[in-house]
Length: 324
Image (cartoon, rainbow, N blue to C red; front, side, top):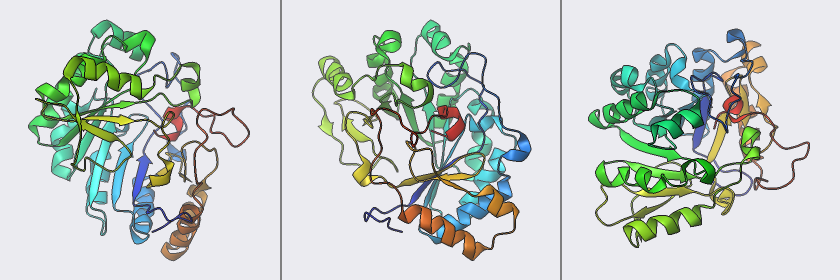
């Protein structure tokens, strides 16, 4: 369906948990966060009801996120149920990769179409400093499993000059040596991300041009989101840039988000949204749910406020709590 600004909203990101097995410095404190209770997150049946209502409104693509979605038991069954839902054309997953080698084959059999791995460095010590966990080997193994399963594979890297600035060309080179896409995502000033300076993706591209030569804009459609992709000579995959801070892409935004505790958020930046959990648990009908969700989508904000001074409308929760 179209929102009030004529944008086609056909993509929903669904967080299935606020728990994570890493402690990335821009996402979660070292001691972790107080997770919401199991009874406070949506059940898979509740999530499926929302997906069906979304499909009736034109949602075609679903991304399963967290926290770390693979720490929630039975997530494979959710992928299978969503993939079988009428109107849903694509189901993908975002993961830190630590558990993917254990679950990848099962997820592929359930119908998973693609997977995005979060990976900010290939240096083991830097990885440990960024995530506070020694797990880089498991992530690399998970990426290899995804490629072996012929899943559409992407790597998401957040450039942070003081941590991985010297490592970005090595990460980009993975798209040269493997059939996958590498995407650089500007640090968003949300939650703990407010404590870091955003590295402009234009600077990252300049660094890659110096190392790999001048690329061409990719003519291939790579996925659901706002990334701008480039093809470098000799690369098997492409390099993408998601530049929410330096180059707002709100005019083409096609997504809404469902948090683990059941809030339908029309924009990541704002703290508002429709709490669906009480409606679902009070027996809302399918038609009523569709009407409620239609209202949220129609009134999606025109533009985010990333980079502006926070006010009472700004989302202040940590990224792990709202789903990236």
